[in-house]
Length: 381
Image 1 (cartoon, rainbow, N blue to C red):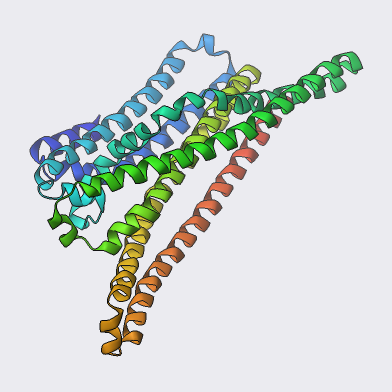
Image 2: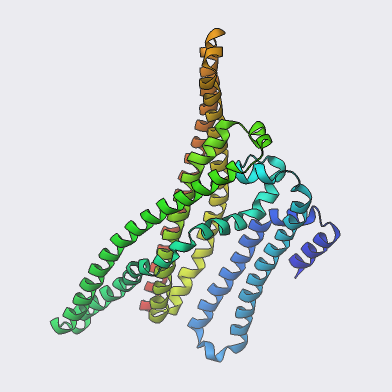
């Protein structure tokens, strides 16, 4: 309550800068209340070992209220941070529409506006793939089958250890074989369909961008260099289409498998499932921080590449002038300077990816150790 009260008062008193300051602390607030939820779930597990939760209604209701209120604080804090950008974007959007939409050369002063428009941009990009969404249902069969395979593996092992009968063992083995066959076939279809979808999206993006460029005023081409425009038309459209296709593929596959796994996990042991759930928020938090930083680096790389293309285009188009002044080495050094800046950004990307993989792998291993330890504790007790 104190967190929300202080943030609400700050936003109401300073509607220009207050919400942006609230948004800066979103990660810290998320981490704090994730710790509160984790502690509550751990307390729930400890209470469940003393006596049945049906005999502890007050404790159970208090834990549920703590988790629900923590999630409410996180969502409300996020809404307060978003209010910032709706106010600032109205005052800073004058005169930049055409350049930002087509070339994307926004400076430091538009960072807050870009953060709010990212969701709208994602929605616009997904709208270009709307005609291909009918294939998504056909691509879910592979993930659906993969979600059932671990369960039937367990059934097969139980039939050997518990029943010790080939009659019980044959049925789950045949089921696993059928699921594996269907999953492999559907996986191949999914890969081919997503490749085709990526090509269709790339076609739409390039066509739409080029037609938009053709409708611009002559002053637009005077203000923006040819190298920048060509870089956006060639490199950026390909990268955007690749990212959209890959992310949709991974999202659909992970969502279906995740739902299936959680259903089986809750059916087998809700206590072990809670232990697993307690580690997910921290893994997601690391992924969020890495994703924001990597997105920032990626934009800088694309901007630097566009500047390098601009230098190359201007040099090649004015080669007679360059030769007349004997400045071939100077132009080559200018081009290399731009490439070296991009290389420095690539090194930052590599370091960020290495740190992310290390933290993600460590978190996953720690989660597996926690599940193994608590599972052994449940078996022994």
